Amino acid sequence: GAVVSQHPSWVICKSGTSVKIECRSLDFQATTMFWYRQFPKQSLMLMATSNEGSKATYEQGVEKDKFLINHASLTLSTLTVTSAHPEDSSFYICSARDHARQPQHFGDGTRLSIL
Amino acid sequence: SQELEQSPQSLIVQEGKNLTINCTSSKTLYGLYWYKQKYGEGLIFLMMLQKGGEEKSHEKITAKLDEKKQQSSLHITASQPSHAGIYLCGADPTSGTYKYIFGTGTRLKVLA
Image 1: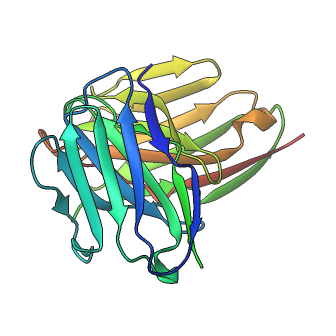
Image 2: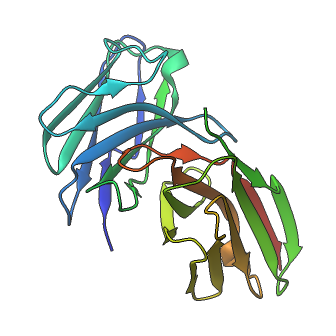
């Protein structure tokens, strides 16, 4: 089945640091990748949608300059949390999809803790 | 905006019992997807339903989509502790859109 690899799985860093999370589709070409944030005991909150080679589309309320998304190839998207602060601590999950009639396949998530 | 209502919110069953989780939309869905999530992990894709009246099974899990394509159910037969987790339905609200709407999730606990 389709595999999406997300790295790292856990990050602990100091306030003010920038953190990069990678999301790779290993066995299919991901036309579209998604970045979600999940708070404890809540459902997924979509942050942004990215298409290969174009700018990401951010959901309302998500700061573009804070959460930088790059989708440089059909198999790789990155999310960079810039100048992270404790309120950015959360569980971030990516997913990838090859086209609209197929399911999204999810990475294992990244737990980000900002001290 | 379109939403997916999922019920029940949580469920505790004894091992060996059957159970059903429902996912309902106020509007016709283009595609319906079921996922399972364990706490602190990503989502595991279970099944995709796209046609009205469609039914799919994998091991002890069966998912159905009604004829109007507005309601789906996920049925687990003879539940086991390995079935425990959070079950989420996701849907394509309209043709051609790339992003899902998600249900609120059902937390399942199976007692050994």
